[in-house]
Image (cartoon, rainbow, N blue to C red):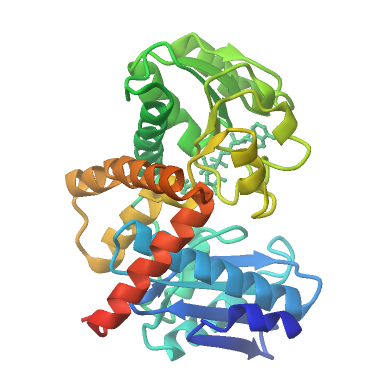
Length: 349
Ligand code: NAI
């Protein structure tokens, strides 16, 4: 795999196979410098093994950056199971995967992700204790994610207007699912004017009823006349086609992988659209998962840590302004610096 050269900073990559259950999985441990590598288990019908390996490598590095920027005692890892989550999943396959995770003796902690559920993680957990996100564990991370995004939006507002007060600001929320609903509550409570869209018309109707939100077509929400666009549905909504239509002055939302490709960050900067890096602003969920992993679940502490995401976002904006780098590049650079400092300080206890 020639592109592996781009990924020479990983500690370990395991190709895990189990003939009896048909399991083929890749477990990538990018870094355990800050603590055990924690990151979701994705099940996806990758076309080739190469595609699966590259996804695991890319996502595991992303988890290191996300965890370290949130100040968590966790490293970065990710696993992918190759297969169709609807047709290829079985109890035997998930348990076989659990045994592979167990073989790593805690260097990697699995959690749910695209294509896996808390129930699946319970099956994985029959073979290993190195699994998070179980039903009855920390519970739904979405309220924490939404609270962190809300504070990230306040930091974004301060950068735009000089004040973090959201009163009267027009905020377009794309996706009213677990995170989007809680986010709307916070924004409306502070007097923001909500513009919303979802494919589910019931969820839209609820926001109109609860908060007097203005509804727009799901295909047009990115182009809404607003101050801040908050993507809280799918990834890659910020792309070469959508950017010219974006009227918001800033983008700050929960969705993972908002930029279709990294180069979109420069395109946003060129157009003067401020971007709050997704993995920084949406870290509230992993902050709550981390508390589950470390056995220190304390609601108030997790809320405080999620609120502190606002300060991190502000510091990224400040450095981007000072250096001329994109906010996305600044986030990666800060993560790399923190990692280097931890490495220099010696192994995690
Ligand atoms: P969810 O599945 O509960 O909600 C997504 C919502 O978006 C659904 O209501 C869906 O109908 C809607 N939607 C889908 N396509 C749409 C479209 N084209 N236009 C408008 N609406 C559309 O997901 P959840 O948990 O709220 O997560 C939202 C995003 O935030 C995802 O990208 C997720 O990866 C990310 N995220 C979530 C975290 C969490 O704690 N739940 C943590 C970190 C990131």
